[in-house]
Image (cartoon, rainbow, N blue to C red; front, side, top):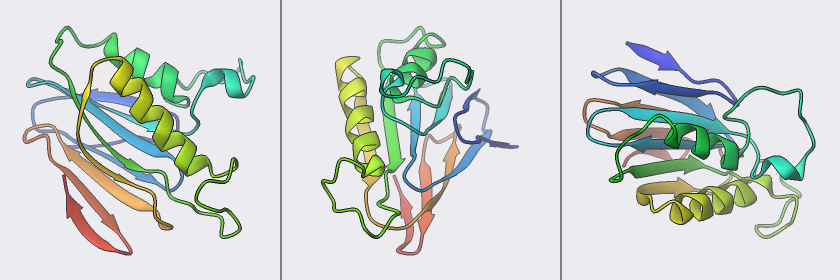
Length: 152
């Protein structure tokens, strides 16, 4: 079964379900243990950066998304795989403040590290979008982009 994860959403699955999303400057963050996995389609780094209290999508901001996912796990041996953070707008430089893809990736890595979650694989940056499938049976992430196909 394929479970689509839209922008700003979090989905949790197990038993061989496939979590799927497509990201550009957003980050796909998969957190898992040996029994289940969660995928968040993260749009922005921190909820305090933009005052948007009416938006109830828990996966929209990296800090809220990762905290919400952690509430669904009892394990202390969590791992993560992350992908996305592309520089979509051609006028952005790689370190430009408005390069939201770069900022998203840095925020996700910082929050995962602060929570003691080991990043097992990452595919961040570049200039093209990615289609991502995460298999909850094998915990493998398949990433397709203009650059080809990658497995983490």
